[in-house]
Amino acid sequence: MRESVIYQDIQQEKALSLVMRLLQRKVGTIPPVLQLHIQALPSTQLDDLAEALLDFTALQNLETWLTQHPV
Image (cartoon, rainbow, N blue to C red; front, side, top):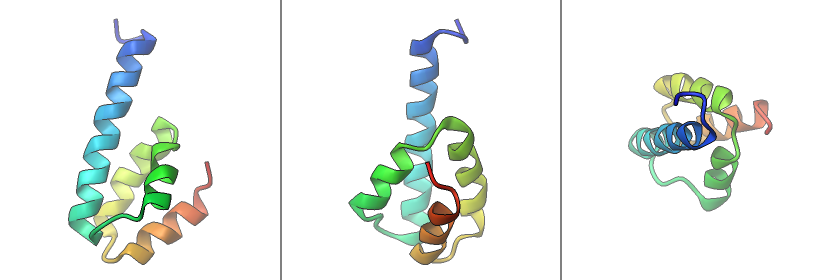
């Protein structure tokens, strides 16, 4: 079951939802253009972002990270 596409999609959506909530709590409102960029990240980069956001203190940190990690 873990290998099914549907299962992977569900896991990706859960991870995305968690990362978005954590980002909003850490840096405030995320502009729509950045939200789209985050939604387009593959799961490996989404995991990397989840770890990196622990050090974020401002929206600029997110913008810099996304610039350094293109989709």
